[in-house]
Length: 299
Image (cartoon, rainbow, N blue to C red; front, top):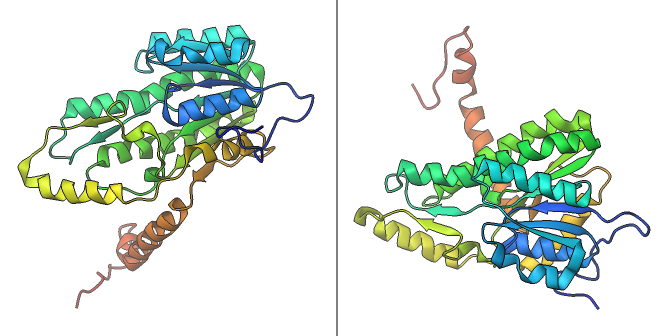
């Protein structure tokens, strides 16, 4: 019988093939938990990590030797090195490294302190880099591996009030796109997973931080947050099949949207950007040196 986290229609490993071995950060809740359990339920093996080991305590009871639970705060580079090495030694290899740990910071740019932005980047960007730098020597030595990074549709478009979170995902996207070219010669593949709005715990107090508010932005933020509540949210339990399709593919994509709302939004955003760039093309070209520029709308 299929479970909500492992739909019967989802891809399964090739009969006789060795189970895949996953290393997953942020596996205590949200997508990290959904994907860790789905991988275990299809017969793969998982090193599941979280800041609080107690949040993973039920997994060994359910899945026995197929799961290794590790305490990991991705902002602690020494702990990252230890956890990745321990997982690799325990299972003998790592096939998939899934950088999933992250959170969102809510506040307008004027409200948000530099300290809060630095803390956001320590987890969402530098923590992910620490995991990658710990895993890459092992994956290169193996001659294979698949890096998955949980980004967002907001890695391509932005929203007010969560602009710092969006910026962290834009950085995350750029790092992984560059990484994909750097590690391809070693047999290592990279896929950026870009969910839209889903009914996960990402909006819970554990996954959100709030900047101190300023009264001048109160009404704007109230209307923005009310709008967020109206978004259609996807079912997290519907996502594992898409993830398995990627990791089982002979030629996995660099990017994968999850949900049906990201692509229309990105199409519209890029159409607007292209229209602006094209309207100002003469000005841009003149900046190269040559003919005088014609400024759009000027007489």
